[in-house]
Length: 91
Image 1: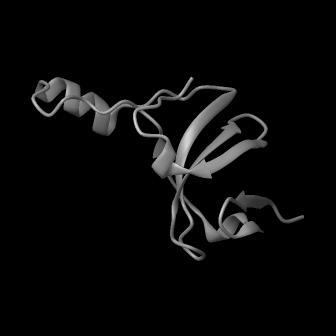
Image 2 (image 1 turned 90 degrees about the vertical axis):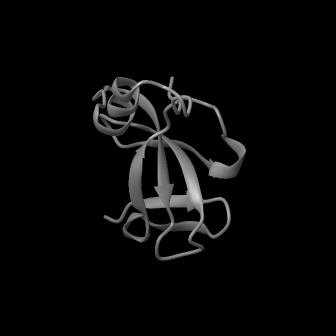
Image 3 (image 1 turned 135 degrees about the vertical axis):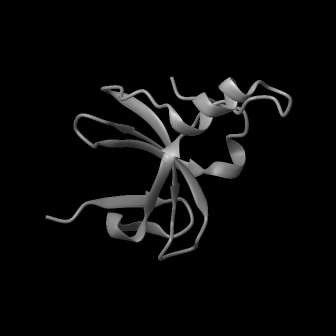
């Protein structure tokens, strides 16, 4: 059984067309400490439940998306263009 992701630009597409790029996290200020940047770049939580991630539609429209999905069941709740999510963070 294939899994599909609904791209807001292309419609339902096989999940293999997408690349998961990481959590939607607040970016540190440019003058933040090296420790803050280290945490931002390398350290991640591994939550169970609803989580927002950046996905790239690599084999389709090549747009960046924000996808909210359940990390336990992989059910996708929402997909939207990442351009509309500046400054938002994962719940």
